[in-house]
Length: 234
Image (cartoon, rainbow, N blue to C red):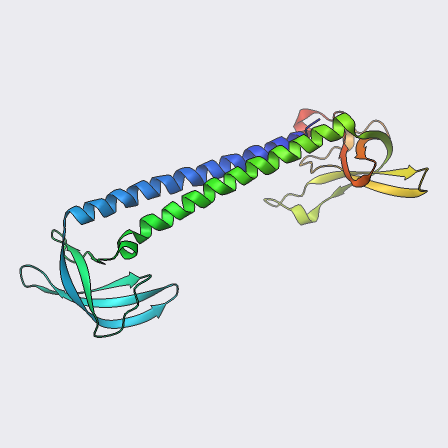
């Protein structure tokens, strides 16, 4: 049995990652074409660094440059990788249509926004892959416990609200049961998955089945098949 909560959580993670990937890909495409458009309308010139201000993680640099029609302009832009000081000369490109748009003629400075969104896209894809691998592993482990784990019958103890897992002002519930191991003479406590609806009214039997790895009793899965779907859903 793969619990409904596990499946819902996996679906939510995958859906959220797809949203982020889609957003970053769109931003990357927009920024790429924006930079291409700027380059197609720009021309190069030299600029003088008027002032430099440190603003982590970049420098805020004020440039003075002269356009082709001899107009003197000053503009402040962020620099990421270029090390400059006041008085330095920099090769820049400015937009012939909108001359105040200026960028340092340097690959990283020109394409910095595109590189950022490309990096975020790659990170999101890798994170999505990690979620898929991890969720598949969890699902396989749950199936293995159901197939190969020892089935024990535990004694229903109580229902508790997990205040540490509060979401939107609501607390999830967990069913707690206990089992006495006759071999080790130890008593073990088991907790169910989070249930966002109180299952109190549906616990008719004081005995609850648990699938457990007898070699590692921390690995277990409580059988909640006796609960209706509206209780198992988030």
